[in-house]
Length: 471
Ligand SMILES: Cc1ncc(COP(=O)(O)O)c(C=O)c1O
Image (tube, rainbow, N blue to C red; front, side, top):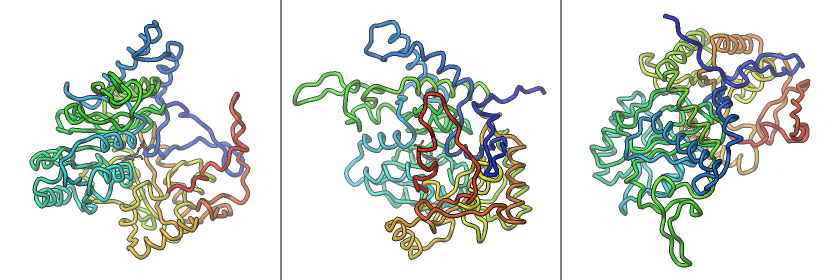
């Protein structure tokens, strides 16, 4: 069977400098954080740009064209996630934005609670705390263990759990969650289910109708459309009467000095001028991924995962972090590990400076989960908290995460494996110094220079690339 190549990504052949000044092909193994754009997305946005104008409220021809492009993008996203006729696709900035909107406008009875897990990304943890008390299920040892603890919590909640808020797949360790079964349990106990699909959407088929999922959040920048838009897909009846999080133009039908008549969905949750080009990009990415076939994408990534699993199994000094080991259970292309005696930030710095490999290190915006995985108890966690309050980040805990997607090749995996093998065998080849403020490591001698972009400010004075100190 002849299968066509997977679609190309912008910057796929990018060469970047190593610390010794030589150029090397960039190996992007940080797709769980953000992905490059599909070339098809870039082409579509470029084609749409001359036609760009205000949407919805303009009578001009360009406004009409832009409005149609914007609404067509909504339909593409709806089709991509298998939305039902009674669902609304709301364009937002990203998953964080989507969940904040949702948690702010869902109406729940007094005393209602939210059920989540300890493995959630902060984006699916913090917004819900504003809705009501949240109970967190411990990191499960298997999908069945998750379902059992969920069922027990729902039973104990005796109808008080209004929302089950869960991730579709872990951004830290990659396990795919049993969404269909969780939806069934939630509904059986009178709750709705909201799925954080930031990681699931770019890698697995989503069918909200078949999965019986009530609400879903995703980010364009994680699905090859990094133009600033994401989506909240929600059962319209759940939010049709909601007071929106954002108040402003476009979300209303009529305003008096003392009153406001909010408009219908989805505009009700899209106050302000929307990110039209971002939405177009997201819609095109959704269409391209659907055309390629999510099953084919999953197959490609599973093959790479098997390759990396096999290689890592031969490197016992790499300590893998994961929820469950059973190879028959579905996992995304996310591989997280620590190396005893070597700071996670140093590993990431070596991979970048000596091998042009981009990975993520730290706690992946999932502090409760990563502290659990690393065995950090309450006393140690408190000491981390105190260090951070003093602005000391040198000793913050963490791990290294390699993550991949449709643009990843076997050669990429092999480069990572051989770089890690060298690091384990002979250690870093350069001398590194740690920045006390950010916790990051940098080669003492570094010949890398910044690219120069026509029309953009020089990067020499733009501050340290990793200087935000976030982890
Ligand atoms: C599982 C998960 N949820 C939510 C988010 C937040 O996504 P965003 O930063 O696009 O809002 C991420 C980002 O890494 C994620 O991995």
